[in-house]
Each structure stands twice: as C-alpha cells, then as structure tokens.
Length: 214
Image (cartoon, rainbow, N blue to C red):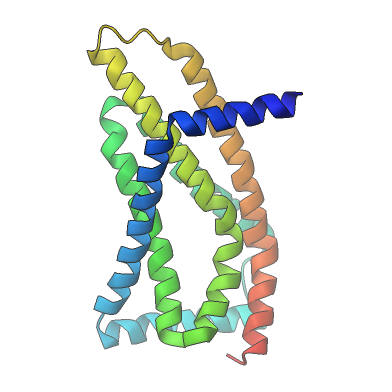
C-alpha cells in the first residue's frame, strides 16, 4: 500500500514538473555534446600530454597500484555529496537558480569530455574503458543529479514566488521538509554509486585493460 502511495506521489511530481525535467535533461545533454566538442578543439600536443597521464593511470590500475577501495569510496561520496549539497543550498537561495543550471551543464560537459577523449584517442578500446570506468556509477549519479536539479529549481522558483507574489499561498515549511528528505535520500543513493565506483569499477577496468592488452 505504501509502495503504491510513493509511486503515485512520484508520478504526480513528475507530471507537475515535466517541463522542468525536460529542460534539465536537454541542458545536461547539451553539456555532454559541448564536452565532446571541446575534445575536438584541443591541439595535438594537448591531447598527447593528457593521454600520457591517462596511460600512466591505466598502467597503475593494471598493476593494482591504486588507492584503497575505502579511500576511493570516501573520496567519491564526498565529491558527489558536495556537488549535490551545493545544488541543494542554491535551491534555498533566490539568486541560486542560474548557478544550478551552470553546475548541471558542467557535469554533463565533464562526462562528455571524458567519454569523447577516450573514444577519440583509443577508438573502440576507449569506448570499452569508458563503459566500465564511467558508466556503472553514473547510471546512479546522473539520474540523482537530474532529479536533485529539478527539485532545487522548483524550490527556488517557489521561494521567488513567495518573496515577490503576494497571491502565492502554498506554505514553504512542508516543502522544505520534503526538500530535506530528498537530500538525505540522494546522499544514500550516492553511497551506492560510490560503492560501485570504489569496489566494482577498478576490477572491471583491470579486466578490460588486460583483455585489450593496453
């Protein structure tokens, strides 16, 4: 019964904010495309220098000379939690709306640049490496970022309405409580993503590196 209530609430929220969801997804995809374009605009020297450091990293992964899984887990969780936390705080502030959009665009740009660079330098081998090193955890992280961006934008808009529109009668306190619950749930899900990145991805990367004889 509770599960059905939550599903109905989620579906209702999605319908109510479908336009924001669409805008956020398109903005993220634009960031991914822009990141891939940046790769093509790099000089040959820049690509060679970056690929050299990348090759050193892959060599360390192949030899097992990487950080402890626990350290990787903490580092990943802290990094993504800070990103989500900043977005959450910006949603409370009236002037934070454009910065939320910039952060989401930059996240898409980083993903697009990383995948684009690997593929441009290593062809299908780069595609495989991107699939095992970037895709697993981002299957969790990206939806969380998108949902959190939508909630932050929505909350920011309601704060603006509350401040400047006298007729806006929707109480903020219940919305703020939901906003806190959303942040807590996001951090818990990011813990799962960090676990994938720390405990699963390195092993997959090592197997792929050995199989393609990088």
